[in-house]
Image (cartoon, rainbow, N blue to C red):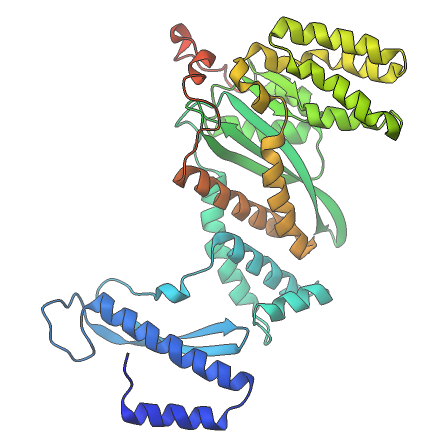
Length: 406
């Protein structure tokens, strides 16, 4: 947008007397304001005072807007319109993850639990002057409405034959102490082979009560059709699955099982033992899978009796995948599909290090999962091959549902 001569002269004078960061701030403020006015003109269909048939509404003054940047606070004026609403796209709120991260850092700052790293983050966000408690509350409230709706949304729109459960751990303040908090996440494979984030919960531990509460919350939201639950051998998880997910089998994650095995054998034997155990999962039929487990247990038992005992004890849970379609086996033998999710959660939460409370932790993790879920829905890709899902629900039982929640 072209500036008038008087505007140009005033701008040149302000730039001539400014230096360093103030020069950048002045330029940024002016450029943003001009872009905002140009977008408003395009939205309205007319310049200020211009008569045109393309006009859709009229200007109705401005409202002040402070934009915090690394160059300092920019004082902008947002045009108001008589009908409808207008907010410049350049200033659209950050993605949910960034909003949540911003809210968490600000909340920690206001609550007085900021460390030097948190202070540095606050400054990196451009908020050198700090932020008020009311502003933090407003940011959190706006964001929490979206995130709560996502966590509590109904799940009855489709069946989920496979669900994955895993936990990661983060630090948060509880009763003025820094403690480890379990963040449990559930994702599911839909009956047409797609993926969705089902839910999450933050709690004290991974006890049966905790897992049962989480699984019941999924069932109450309409989760049905579950045939297999894939997870680690967390304390209480298996018992909770047996009680709540009636009709579903449990597959113990093969990757986590190997890690448990490594804990009871010498390091130099790890590669050989792992390669031997992996042959169990490379067999062509369910019968061969189970027979190979017995063979491997006998082979390793001569040198590592603890490994033999572990294999035989976990036989049913390690081979549960084998009764499902062979084309699904590689994807349902472990919780690897959750590994990328957990890495992204840790990448985001490591920035904060210690959360001021459980709500802040839940907010940021939900935002991470919300963005992933949106990507899966917006750019759908079959996680399991087309045509193979029909085998999970034979025609004569196509409309059967699991028994009601225990």
